[in-house]
Length: 155
Image (tube, rainbow, N blue to C red; front, side, top):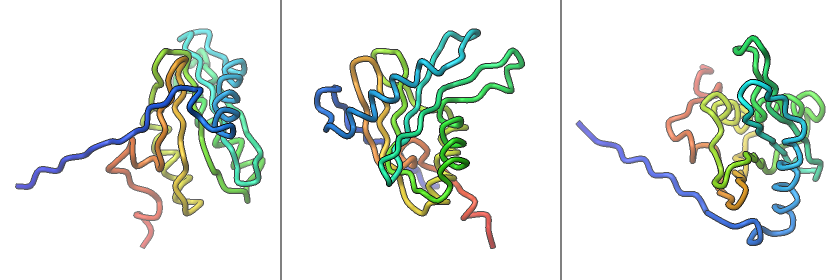
């Protein structure tokens, strides 16, 4: 029997420590909170995705009285990227939650990011943004270390 040790390494920053490009994206993710429809949970999430051509696409969580039909901020933003900018690769993702410390995307969204990284054949940079702190990392495998993708399923 072998034991596997899985480590996660994130860089913790304050908003002021971000470079100007990252500040702009983090601020866009915060502004995306205004697009949230969260009457049931009251938990708003905003997402901003920067594309390689410098376009920033916004999204936010969209709740529904039929709870399984809710959309996460990350999923709504990824769908907008895929449908509005299908041939432009993602560069960086910022996800904002109105808490002091950042929160991680849910498992569904982590797997969705894995699929997009596979489709685009590149790992993205991520900023998880809270009210006073930012966590930065490269590649969703950081948060989903035993992930699989469609690439693994194709013969």
